[in-house]
Amino acid sequence: MQWRWTPPVLCLILTLFAACAPALASTALAQGLIVLPEEVVLTLPKAFGQEFRVSYTSHPMKAIVDSNMPMPGMAQAQAPADVALREVRYSEEGGGSARLVLEFNYQLPEGVVQEDAELFQLVIPKTFVNTTTRLVEFGVTYGHQRRADSFGPNVVNYLEIDLKRNFEVKLVLAQDRVYGAERVSDMAKRTGAIAAVNGAYFASNGRPLGVLMIDGELITEPYANRTAVGLRPGGAVMDSVGFVGELWYEDGLLTTISGLNRPRLQDELIVYTEAYGTKTNTNPYGYEVVVVDGVVVRLQPEGNSTIPQGGIVLSAHGAQREYLSRLKLGDRVDLRITLQPDWSELGVFQIIGGGPRLVRDGQVEITGEAEQFKDDILKGRAPRTAIGITADQRLLLVTVNGRQPHISVGMTLDELANLLIELGALEAMNLDGGGSTTMTVRNLVLNLPSDGKERAVSNAIVVVPGSK
Image (cartoon, rainbow, N blue to C red; front, side, top):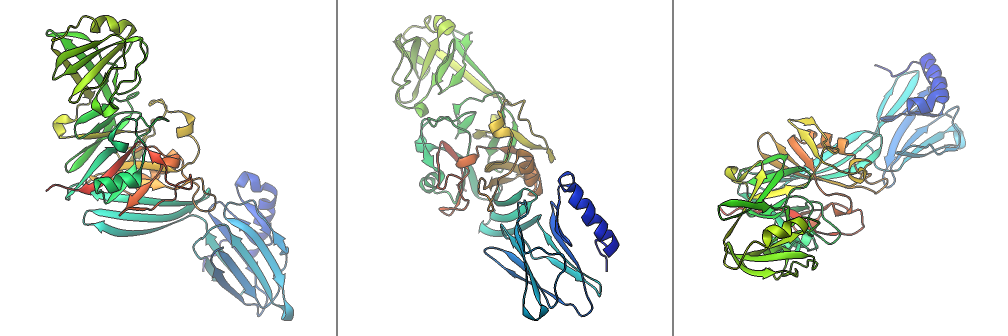
């Protein structure tokens, strides 16, 4: 039998831990009881004829150690400063028996007991992963994890989708418009999805932030060359995505396009499509041109144009006004908008931006600074949503509950990246998280939103039956 410590070594370790506990990230609570980041270790000497019996309760979890003799050196009650161990209580009862109760803040695996004639030892792990899976449909598997580490517990939900099966992973705009807000569960219901998660970041008014393409239509342009995922029949790709927009007139480049379906800023040319709404809602300091089937049909110097069915509005400010003002009614113009890389040749018709990247070629690679993310995304632990691609072209959609002490504390981006690798991701990126984090399967919300209720969001990723 292999022991952690022999009695002389145990006394020395207890003395050292009592003096150096902060430096060693552990706590010696009483004779024989040590709290380590990964486990709680109880090691007690045995008197002749002494017997120990261990039992457990749940809600709250307690490990109860009963003995037919006293346990020397135990205080009546102690409250350690530990994420898992809440309280230690000791009592002696009639007939010389004694009881030691270790009460925990959340459920842990039952401990391992080792003993011989001289020592009794109970080791309760604080780091663990318990995973269960079930088949939603052939090709779609749902997984649930209860796990914990030295920072506390976490609840993980994930979907693994075989993209070669008869399922499509698509993107949905809330209320089918740029300035929309809708719960993920409602978007799943109206699209007939068997499962869904929240998608890209969005502004307070519901507008998506970053690249979004739905069924081949580019809704919004990339920002800061952030990471994006492209979805195609049978597979997915991930890369940093850039944007090139050009307006051509009379076989020549008239000017460049700054963006799509977002507020127009100084010296910008913005393209507005039907996905934006019925009006551009621009201020009167711009110049706008309405185009249908490539032909200029209206000039609007005062802005706030009506967006025609099947058409677009070009809206310019500042230096860009001069270029648009050259156009006349009846002129033909050509918009050339491409993404870099151009995934259209791969059959990609759904693209969602997020970031930062978490995993590249099966290794942790977090590109937060390069993608211009701020500390509210990059630092600390929080509820998270992520997307990953495995080597055999399975798609992973992952949510982590957070901001719920003793239930699920959330993850850092580094922890999230390692989780995706653990689940098999070769490539992975972060999506919008916090109170937006949501997963639904069969019209049931399976995670615990940190707001206490499901949040209305801008867009979602849905899994729908294929058309084969």
